Length: 463
Figure 1 (cartoon, one colour):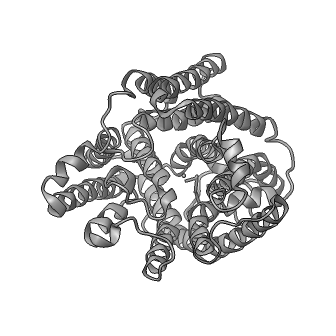
Figure 2 (cartoon, rainbow, N blue to C red):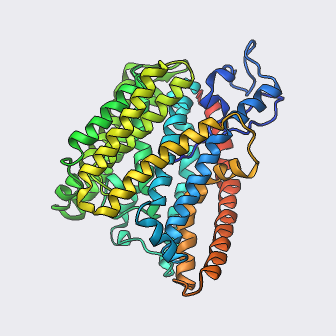
């Protein structure tokens, strides 16, 4: 889901911190902030005034607000197995709030992430920021899940029986496209898709082919319809499992080596200004190719066509960003956006027919609601939002990763509540309060300090 999950860019020295979404105002409006001299000071001729920083941040609060709302939708969906069960089941006949939430996340990530890479102009800086932004809380969530399972709180789904293989699948944050039933916590399947997108965007950037977002979105949408029903799930896993744990270990470690090695090459052999040397391009290509092969031939959840659909949505978000920046013609771009939503809708309705009528309703309503939500967010992007709304987006990564752990604790002690709707509603409100408190700790104690450390490290290594 991640993020939907990106770090705040520092404001120019002497300016108040921007209130934009995490990857900062310059991520979505790169022209708003000038090149940095490496000390956090904007270059001459590009210095923002405090008022400009504030206005830029206000324009981007809508992305934080969308992320926060999407995270709460996922929480409602998962909590609904224990509290407000009847209400969730009623809604679920036509609408899947969890699926809707992750669709919004992916669209927002597509809008922000490529802009962040292009703003940095450095593959090294981009990967350092991803490392310090995502991995610390990701590792905390895994460790807490393991500790909880050891004490009977939650489950590892069998991962404890092959720890080395499981760790290898978690290492590069792509467990969903490496092993079966190894997403710990259960929501990290979305991070696998996020990581594939990062690798693909970085590869395209290294070859200077990153501007054709509309072409990629449209091509993936067509792929979802044409190939979404025939691409195999867990094909490599099944092949490797014929050789037992050793085969699975080779699959996971081999993928880790190719991806990590490719990232390291692309980071080492890159320079500021977007220059990537030949060895860096080879590394980026190997990493991206490995991830795409795993995505299209080894995905374990949720559907065979998910890889095409999710990447299509993410590149659609990128296209919308480029259109706003004047980098893509509006009429043609809006036509592509509409076509991608039609194609992804058709892919789900056609290839998902075997999942039943409820799924077809959910797929259609979730895509329509995602488009409407993003459109409303864009329409409100110049409005001043109440501070608590974008704050939900600031802590949304923690909300997303840590709420399953809170559910595990609740399930261990309380299980399903057999009480009236009013009582269950109060319990749900209390549950949300606990999730937000835990998520605030996750953000202020883990995410924020590590992002700050990442910036310092990035300056040291010339990122």
